[in-house]
Amino acid sequence: MLMSHYIDIMKKAGVKFTRPRKLVLDALQAAKQPLSIKEIHKRVRNKADLASVYRTVNLFQDLGIVREVQFGEGYQRYELIGEGQHHHYVLCIECGKLEDIDICLLDRVEKMTNFKILSHSMEFQGLCHSCAG
Ligand SMILES: [Zn+2]
Ligand SMILES: [Zn+2]
Image (tube, helix red, strand yellow):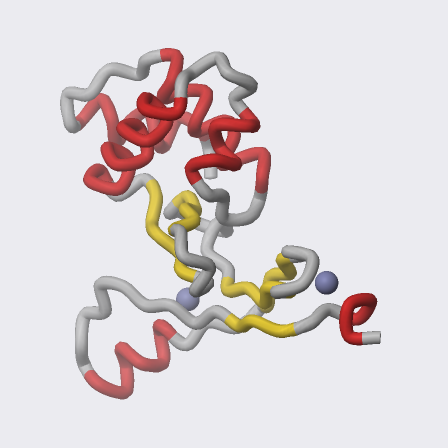
């Protein structure tokens, strides 16, 4: 997804595209996987403090720029919403390795039930090849 798409969403909502907001967007886009608040903070290399990363992510959630992804780790991760951004993952509970899997049942569930699905999650935990060995 192009950066301009997210800038557009902010513009329409009357939200300024500030430096911390740019840093958080850049971090999420570069990561290509869901990040926790702490991981985002690490990636912006202290150019924005933890509280402002937290506020920015909350704002992005309200604006529909990011969504929460749960892995049962006791904290939330966040991924950008947009074409090519949505994946499901398998997480190694030993080393933390994340791999995306090319399956999403969202369209099928909507067709099957006639529901407008607002959120869903389908994450897997296990042991990766090197940790299982
Ligand atoms: Zn592992
Ligand atoms: Zn999905």
